[in-house]
Image (cartoon, rainbow, N blue to C red):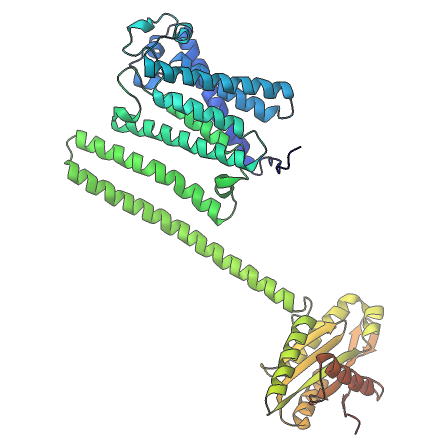
Length: 472
């Protein structure tokens, strides 16, 4: 029994992953079947080895077809043991075929494979007894191993498969650039051993398909991400590959046409690259900036919601208690103006909910919060503890008179009656006040005294305030 951790491959999280894989595996099948049919029917454009854009030999076509079929079987019949065995046989056959081709190139001996896969062609007359380019053989080995490892459920296998696939893409890219700029040693060795454009395209598609088979792991986790990282990667990566190749090709065409000399062509290509990539970078920078601004707004909203009451918009219990504890600590460290807490609740609030509606009750709570904010300074804090209970932290209180002025202001501003239809309910607010003293050791102790003062105000007739006086 092994202790290795096995991860289950996630299915495609993105709707376009499956489409990419379908194209990546089906297009090589169509191309290779066309090539094989061309060899069987002896179509000259296919069988001529010196035709650059149709020079995929039948051995290469059969190998690419085998890998494509293997990936389709592995994707569609993941739990079938027979399908797994067939896929494994296909992969091993392709890798062995590529190794045999390497040996042919190294030692120059003839293989029966050439005779079986190239009907009608005298393979003995070739300068090298092989139709497969060494970079093609290497791509087969790398793609075959990658296509097998990617079907495993272990991250280290998946990361290895992605690394091998990226290597295949690089080899194919060399072939594309070689054909584009007519640099033969980029895509083959000698006149009879080349990787055609179709072969390079097929390998590149297969490698891309392998990468998108596990989109939630390794580098593909960044590429397929829906966030800023994924979007920037999907924009700049293709541009970094396509634009330099295209601009280089345009530059060569201009030189061949005699429009300018080589140094002018290089300068024009450099300027074009600068303009295009600067535009792409600025465009992505704007996107990232906009995304960052939206993220900050969301973070600010979340922080506000975490510290404020959702109904009234004033501070909640957590923020009030944190501020009160900080203010008490500050008061104990230094002398100077003290502070006060006003503890209040609404009179007859339950009747508003019961006889009118909860909607009317919520409106009364919002109105109360707005009135309390109008009565205090910007340095003070208004909070809702819950239900119809509100508290105010009054900073910098020099005498009880300061607190009484604010309490009177609140009582005058609050409505006296609520009317709903024929219902008429008397409402108001009662306030308990406590002024901080050194004997208050905790915030709960201080609030307990404020609550006691509120109790006195309620039992003295409501709609008034009472100040807590400590027993002598």
